[in-house]
Image 1 (cartoon, helix red, strand yellow):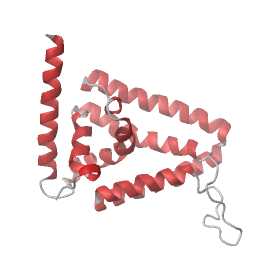
Image 2 (cartoon, helix red, strand yellow; image 1 turned 180 degrees about the vertical axis):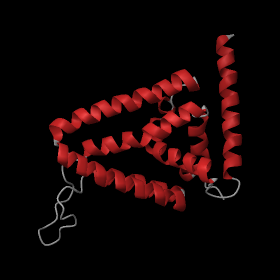
Image 3 (cartoon, one colour; image 1 turned 180 degrees about the horizontal axis):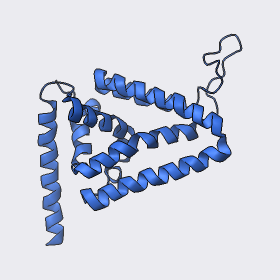
Length: 200
């Protein structure tokens, strides 16, 4: 059964889905969304530590893992995803922490002077791809222009959820996808109607 308010997964997923109905645009987002998260975590690796353990209690003896804003962001994203759906959210949380570990290792190896250049190039490619997906194929502005927080926070989870639905037929609970599709169809019908009025 769906939740209401802030944790209404149906409503949030339908909002995202209404901006991503074209198969090519969906594929572009599937390819580029998680690399954006990964490269962002590479940069966040260089933020100051929020907690410095004593020599007697060193959580990460390897040295490259730091309890900083990268870790905090990963924890927040993971907790939100698990709150939305325990099964898919747990997988998303595992992917988030894997990204954090991988990004920390890459950042540690590259050093800041090279890492920010690699991140800049990767982010430019990923964001350009997504804007092309919306402008050329979806022909609708990205969701971030209407809901910046939701687009940045929920996009990785929704890309994963969409992939699980497509390849495994997964849904958080029975009837989820049918309900989401109805909401998406209603949203797109309203959007097309407004678009036609502007053109007329």
